[in-house]
Length: 267
Ligand SMILES: NC(=O)c1ccc[n+]([C@@H]2O[C@H](COP(=O)([O-])OP(=O)(O)OC[C@H]3O[C@@H](n4cnc5c(N)ncnc54)[C@H](OP(=O)(O)O)[C@@H]3O)[C@@H](O)[C@H]2O)c1
Figure: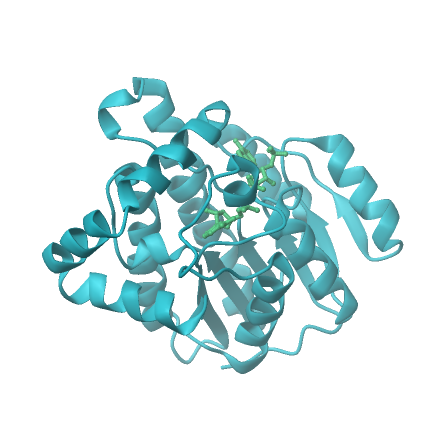
């Protein structure tokens, strides 16, 4: 079931990042009020100044359960949750410290679950609302060097599919967005990793537009990647062993290695 964004209050996490900034602009331009959350308050304040009215900065650290609970209280009425904050959690699992694993699980999965649990009852009571989860094509297919990231992004997909059924006939919709490789800004861009020439990319603005349309049209899932990348992800979900062999032949390990090195500061 779709939702008109005009006049809605949207709580957007990860609003200071490459995709979050684009989502904030896209939803605001459709008439929504944007409650922008992330840790970096200076970036949030600049975003709110740029948007003008209908924008509020709500700094929070989503790796801290108390901060997640406080964020819900500070946000007030929320018509739409966009759970977009995420850590790249890239590199082989054996290279992670215990607290780095917990932080990735907390930010990428635990916080979205708690935010949905806390905000959905108000939406159900009002008979309208929408929950959006920003996953990744790594939430449909997995590859070496991103097992922890995939664990969180597959988890999000399971959460969203089940939750949509739980909320059927309540007026509350659920959409999951699955970006592929995003250029120009965001965690992949920031890593400076180079893709083989045959792997296409999308922009943060394309993710934001697809996300907004996903809400308006009540879509369960929205992929944001060129067709060959989407087909690769779908095949990876159906035949993971074959997909792993293909990725190995096409140099997937090298890209994963570049990403892990470029994202080491985001653990
Ligand atoms: N870029 C891509 O190619 C790509 C592809 C597929 C999926 N995605 C997904 O898209 C989403 C946005 O990614 P992006 O590319 O925009 O990444 P990004 O530029 O690195 O932004 C990540 C966002 O998450 C926030 N964040 C990180 N740790 C946090 C914490 N402890 N508490 C609160 N907020 C925290 C960051 O804000 P602060 O640092 O200010 O806290 C930032 O706003 C993520 O869920 C990501 O997995 C991205």
